[in-house]
Length: 208
Image: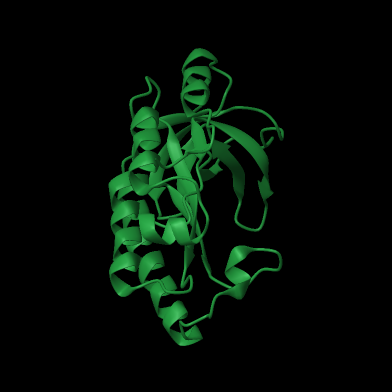
């Protein structure tokens, strides 16, 4: 019987639902969508175990955005296993992923494995996954068009005449204001989304 790491996904979801001031965002690293590759990485979970946690997050009362970490080109990874990772991206619908090519790390079990995948192939696989994820994000971010959301101000881009902030789902929002005095860093203006991109939202502040 496979053992799994202790996780606090249910507790995190319950906390987000119960505490209005918490962000609607969870970062849940997966590394690979292939159970065999996960075992080779010495991960103590399977694809199915991971997707069960994703189901808990999606069942929350609040809509929680999700991000993750992905590694491609792990020694012995097959083309079919890369596709398993691609289908995982689509099944989960991440709002962002941090995707990396495998490279040997000291003091890890993989250091003794033959790095059998050429660097060019790792780059191809990485590009394929990033393109698939970009399309997922394009559709995900497009859902916010016309929405009015609270945005935490992080700074000002005076060259573009925009205020820079983040939504409760940890998405970057660049917006304009009509008044001469810009909202202070740390404030929470309401913003109407007027344009969407795969990695950011654009909007204008709603006058109070």
